[in-house]
Length: 200
Ligand SMILES: [Zn+2]
Ligand SMILES: [Zn+2]
Image 1 (spheres, rainbow, N blue to C red):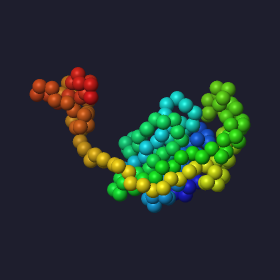
Image 2 (cartoon, rainbow, N blue to C red):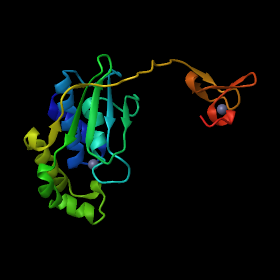
Image 3 (cartoon, rainbow, N blue to C red):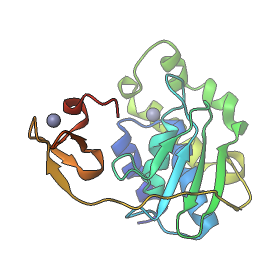
Image 4 (cartoon, helix red, strand yellow):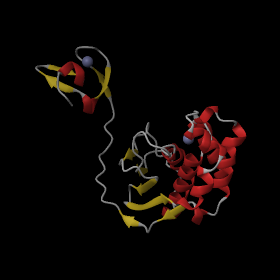
């Protein structure tokens, strides 16, 4: 897949077209290139995203997910909530890592755009006209990489990766399929966490 296809697919997945998700795609692709690795089809890579909760620009995280292939569903993505548009990408085999962060060169242009004016007025991103959404996508995608992100030095990550435990078994009480690592023993029965009464 070429980079433009990855971008357009990422925006489709994301639900609307916005500057922060484009920054996320660019950060993800730059991190892959810096580590010399392909997108994570399996769980070869792990991403730590620094966006927090309930703030602007969190869309960055979806761009990172699609750009790197590190996803919520595959479990090779975690949040370190610092309220920053930054990601550390790690190749698990080698523990080689790089941190890529947003550089606000285009901040004024983004803030003054029709898209951001409408967002500030409380209009949902996907309800803003398509051409106003695309204005910022084109601005951020078309800018020089050095005006959009800062790429750190490659460093060794202190990774402690747990092996994947395969298999499910039905809970002895509610009968719902539960991953083996999440079954708890109560008396002679194996149970899911809610049925067991344990907290975790
Ligand atoms: Zn968005
Ligand atoms: Zn149960």
